[in-house]
Length: 424
Image (cartoon, rainbow, N blue to C red; front, side, top):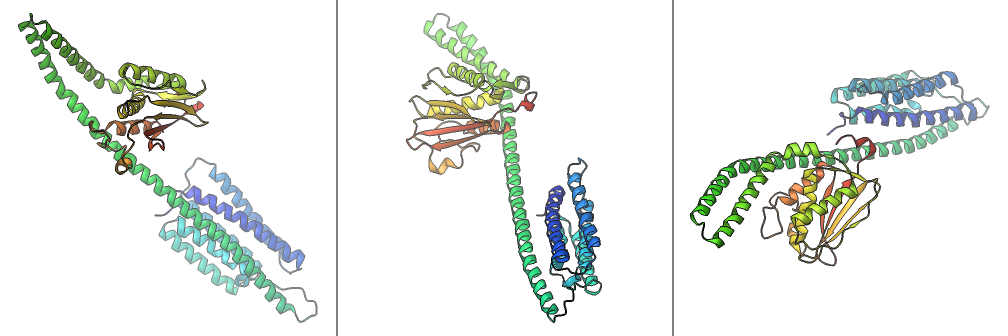
C-alpha cells in the first residue's frame, strides 16, 4: 500500500520539513558568518533560504485551493527542494558539509509518496547533484589567525555539524515513519469499515428481497383464508362459540393484510417522515408507541435527562430499532426494565437494563449478525436490522453483561448539528 492517494497530506508534511530546514540552516548560516567569521557569500545563501521560504508559503496557500493536487505537481515540488539544497551546499562546502544528507529527504518522501518512475527519477537527480557537489563547491575556510590550528578547528566544526545533523535526521525520520504507520493504520481501519458496510448492505438487500417476495406470496393464502372463514361462518351461524373464534381469526387475517400493505409503502413513508425532532419528544413518542404495542411489558418510569436543544433525526426504521431493543429486553426478563436517556455534547446515550440471564459468552461477539439470536425462538434478524438502522444515522448499539446480572443495552446516537437541520 502507498500514499499516492493523498498528495495533499504529503505536501503538508513536506512543508513542515522545509520549515525545520529553513530555520536550521538559517541558524547555521548566522553562526558561521557572525560567530566564526567564516568567509562565504552570505547574501547568496540568504537569498536561497528566502526563496525556499517563499516556495513553502506558496505551498501552504496551494493547500487551501480547491483544485486537485496532482502527482506531477508534487514531483516538481521535490525537484525545487533538490535545487535549493544544491544551492546551499554549493556555497557551504559541498559534500564536505555534514548537512549534505539533506539531499536524501526528497528521495525518502518520493519513495513513500509517488509511483516508482517518479522515485527513480528523483534518485537519479539526487545522485547527479551529489556527484557534481563533489567537484564544484566553495570550501569553508576559517579566518587566518596565524596559528596552526585551522585544520583542527575545521575538523571540530565538521564533527559538531555531523552530530547536529544526526539528531535532526533522526527526528525527521522518526516523525515521518511514525506518520506513515499511523496513516497505514487509518487506511486499514477505513477499508475494514467499508468492507463491513458493504457486507451489511448485501445482507440487508438479501433480507429485503426475501421480505418482498414473502409479502407478495402471503397475499394469496390470506385471501383464501378470508373466503374460507366467511363460508364457515355462513355454514355454522348457530354455533355462537365457533363464531367468536371465527371473528378472532378474521381480525388476525385483516391485521396481517394491513401489515402487508404498510410494508409495501414503508419506503415512501420513510422518505416523508425522516425529519428533525427534539430528542426528548422522539423518545417520549417511542415509549408511547411501545406501550401500545407491548401493554404487558413491565418497566420503571424512564429517566430522560435531555434538554430541548438536543435534536435527532426521526424515521420509521430508527423508531423501530429502539422498539426492537425494548422488545428484546422485555422478552429476556419479566422483571421491570430500567430505561435511561442522557446526552453529552455530541451524542444521545440510551440504555436499557434487564434482569434476564445475560449474554452467553460464545455468542457475545456474534450478536448483531443476521440469524444470530440468544432466544429459543425468533429468526435472529431483529438486532441485525436494529444495528443497521442505527449505523445509517451514525449510531451504534452495544450489549454487555451487567456485573449485577442481566444485560445492559447501550445505544449511542449522534445529535444533529445546526447545519444538518435541513436534511439528513
